Amino acid sequence: MTVRFLIIGGGPAGNTAATYAARLGAEVIVVEREIVGGAAHLMDCIPSKTMIATGGAMTFGRKSAGMGLEEMQPEVDVEALTDRIEDIKDHLSNSTTELLVSQGVRIIKGSASFASPHSAIVTTADGSKETIEFDAAMISTGSRPRIPDWVQPDGERILTTRDCYPPKIFPTNVCIVGSGVTGVEFVHMFESFGAKVSLVVSRQQVLPGKDPEVAAVLEEDFLRRGVRLLKGARAESIEREGDEVVIKCDDGRQVRASHAVLTIGSVPNSDGLNLDLAGVHMDGGGYVPINHHCITNVEHIYAAGDVSGKLPLSSVASMQGRKIAEHVMGLHTREHRHLDYDKAASAIFTEPEIADVGLAEAEAFAHGRKIRVTKVPFSATPKALINNDARGFVKIISDPATGVVLGGSIVGRHAAELISVIALAVTANLKVSDIVESLLVHPALAEALAEAAE
Picture (cartoon, rainbow, N blue to C red):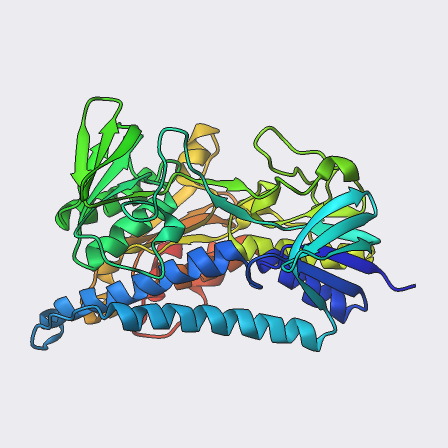
């Protein structure tokens, strides 16, 4: 008997689950109301990283004298950049759609809500309705930017992240509210394009929860670039005054800027799903709790991606989708590795880049765990000097008794790529000696990994 698998939401979790389940013989139906590939992914993550890459190219041009070249002063072509963002987004969405269709997956443009534990009503873009019966279902509806009740974005001067691309204009003076991952990426991005930037930091360091040593490197770079940091301040109102916005903080400080951007988290897209009719529980924040198989409290209904309340990373969502497809098709009865969210690598695309994985140094000390910490600056690595960028370091955390790699942090150029080596070591329980004894390329930034592992 063929398993009928309904997937609500075609982002990284949904399309990965669909393609794996289809290969395994399931009848797969994907309902997506915005864009196949995911709104948070293709309308938020990909455009921001595209703009960061363009800003990085401009920064490199301004620093060209350090590479033995005449100094350049590149200017942004807003129309060309907009086309570039749209081309990348369309290419990724179209290639995902083509793959799913080639595997026999049915894609419905519309929204879905549960009618019972084994049925859902799909409303298409033209208003027509269809009832779909299913054997298994997956909720992967993603998230949207969080908007607090003390501010009302207008899409012109007071912006959410999704109002920023494709870019209409580039602010000359912008205030970023929120100093988490998204916030610091926006600081880097707008400063790269020549804007004067202020950052409202509610804690005493940017990137709260990250390694303080890592945050310190980023703060130092921001200050060197002229970024104004308002530490220990919480925004409590944002209002327009003509062509300016005024951001008022709870400690009396305020910022005047041409634009304000809210980067204060996200909320799950769980409203409108009629989860109660399927018997699926939500927590107080609107997330759908899951177990280690990504199953909700209803045994044949799964949740993945941002809506599941786990790490809001596309890589995590994709892996959840794969694991769910395997579980739906019964492959979990064979050798099956559960997802370990503590071993997920993550990156922040600032300049310098930041990446980490596994156990953090501060976390280990907080729990009284004995660890060995080794750190090597990129200034000791020939390739960093060749690149004219010796900022940052590699830090590896290991078990002093066994030598097993427990985690690590990297700050510097291409950190998002380099962290993969440590991530593999953490996932596979490799030892620092395994990294040391690997014959790596010379000259390469990866040599710092081997040196830190010694």
